[in-house]
Image (cartoon, rainbow over all chains, first blue to last red; front, side, top):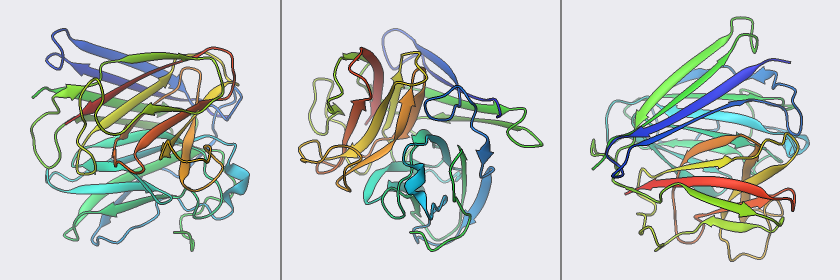
Length: 147
Length: 152
């Protein structure tokens, strides 16, 4: 097992009349246990030059992973404020990450195509995107026929 | 406008042979601009006492305002405030009026599970037909959730 911690702080001094200061830390465990997640895709930084949708975390035989619980990090490293990526799961849009935005979420992948995560860049002029999964899934591959 | 900062840090000394140390800070801005998001739902706290799926963040007009849908840079924070390592909430997206439950089909799609103390921060699309954020606890014992939507 490994010990991996994730922390998040949310702050603002002018969103409300009073300041916002929220802080959380959690240890990343396998589903239903206190055993640490022990696999990672590694932090991938890629330069995408097409508006074609791509799958950062193909799960080919994911039915065995539906009860698991990994964590996913995705960031748009672009510095052009109008550029974004659309992040989808299955057929549904989670949302847009504009330049500098990131997301962090749990992920319980099921069978191929059911709840794949996908990224679609808004421009073909080149954009850096970063992503990583920390997990204990079976059959997660960097390349596959997944979509 | 407001200046809202979010900082994520992920670290491990033994997840890989070389360890992991990731830190990223974002300032929440409106879509395609450098103007900060200016609205928020406030930190909402709910106690759930059934395993029934609920529409945690509904699309359209709400008491806290009407978030811009689809073309936006909205952000959603959700936390399971519990401490259990075995009880969780499933979090998914879809149309809350659909007959299916989370995990049962493709019209509602589960993102993942938040066990006690876990949290997430994701963009919020909010499309009227599929943009509900759905939550289903794994237990009928009291489960308390906190969430906040930052929106334009």
